[in-house]
Amino acid sequence: MRKHLLTLATIGLITGSAHAAVTSTTTHGPEATSLNSSIAVGDLLSGLIGSELTGDQGWHPANTDPLDRLPAFTDDGGIRGTGLTGLMNDFPGAGNPAKLVAYDLGGTFDIGRIQILSGNNGKDGRVFSTTVVNYSTDGGNSFALLGYFQSDPSGTLNDGQQWGSTLVEIFDDSSSTLLAGVTHLQFNLFAVDNTGNQMRDPFDGVNPYTGLDDGLTAAFVSPLIFEIDVIAVPEPTTLVLLGLGALLLWRRRQLV
Image (cartoon, rainbow, N blue to C red; front, side, top):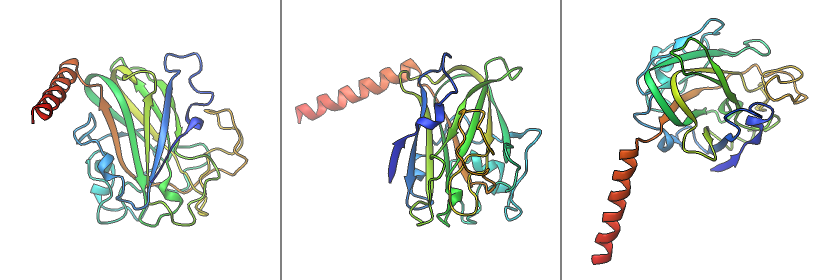
């Protein structure tokens, strides 16, 4: 597996905002199932079915099983036996998301981390991911940008079939709280590849989120999104209990 800090995710996005330390890391696994242990079972999105927003491009024609569609994003299960889990539609058009999905969290929550797991049994360019995350703290009446998160630098190749999965973890590297008081989240999921197994951004010319031009034509091949996790900040009482448990375990070991 390979894990790296992806600085591209925050270039030009959050300067001067309250989220100046927001960043992301990317981990690659050799197989589509290699990173299943990283799935957060019972997170804030577990079992929720998102709403597809205006402009959503639907699903790849090969993805016909309803369980491989919206339920797959939040079923805590990773890739299913069909091998088509979370496969979004290709050719969304330069700059357009392939899928726009929103979640009502059903309450107000402090979020510690967001994870996006993608991959493909074919170990090709569909393993990458590019996501824009927006959030609301007022019941979905208005949304603000958290950031643009591209799993790998444009030009990255997976043509040697070295990777079958990709995990992007989004967090604040100076705080345990990524976002406070969140009621709703929106995920704009983009195409990532050009059929040549090469990561590229979804824009022709300058990327409006990063202010950079990757010098490549826009991606038009979409990824398979296996899971989206939104992990709440632990309650203080939970942290205290965890700390007491660790202390008791240490004391027991000292007495043996």
